[in-house]
Image 1 (cartoon, rainbow, N blue to C red):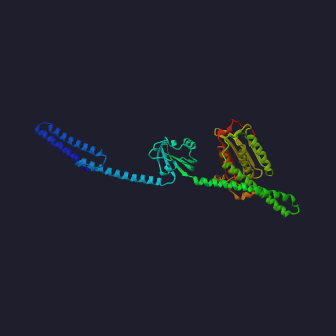
Image 2: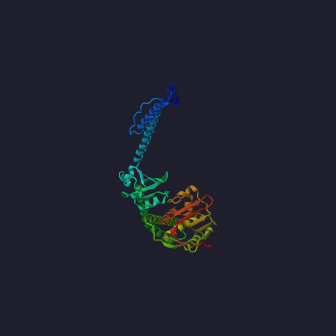
Length: 436
């Protein structure tokens, strides 16, 4: 490029020198004007040729030119070839990405910051009924009109997935997950959960049916055990010991069946949205008295900090089951002469019931699984506590039915705190804290 520029400068200098020489010989300035004019005309023709070459829709070979213009054309042609190779590579990558996305069985949809459709794969056409000839650029909420999806998208909190029936088939269940990227753009992924949903329904039905079928023979067994305990003489100590063990285990099995039936009912029935105004103080005060009687030999100190006019809109039976499980667990796992604190507080986030103890605590690695059925962080304590392993699962489902959540905080050797968080809509009135 520098050599071509030097040649062009030399060519201009020679032209100017020759024009000046003619000016001296002819004693006029017209040769210089004519020389410069010819150079300008030649350069202008080259410029128009460049413009004509650049604006053509189809690429052609560059015009023939000498000197600096020829070098310029050569460099531009080289850049164009690089650009075409980069475009071809990019187009190939985009095509492969589209082919791979279209090969997915999961739905993939992209919407812009205004919620308008930008792209979707073949699975979206199948499960959502999107049409490439009509729906591009349309608002997604015009095509997926389920109220829960509209609320989920508008709320903007995508930590938890959403499961709703497919727009084209109410018998299919889709699980939606949304990820934000760019400047307000959103990537929507949806997976067909119909099979898992059916399996979960079968599991719930199985547990409910088995629990119900166990209740009758268990009742008969308990009745005969009670009769035998009343009729067997005191002298037959070995037989009476065996009967007492059988009676204890039958009571434990009865509690397990009752918890399974309760959990099945919580899972398989719709929440009672009407609700009643529950006096929280009276319920917790009664539970405190029951807890003191339950663990009289442990000599627990159980304190209560609840305002007397605290009210909660809830199902009383479900609420009592949830609170009772938390307090009973605290009594079971808190060692003798330990301290249990029950507190109700309110703020802008709603109402909060906390049950704290100074027991052995729980390793944080077990906390995410504590609400699973029958999960125990320490199996050696099963026989000590006599629990069913379903208490926290029941609490979790009761909270879900009341639009709330259960929070667990614990550490080994530092006790545990179980907190039920209720939304503001569930809190009746604005009670002021009073001394317990």
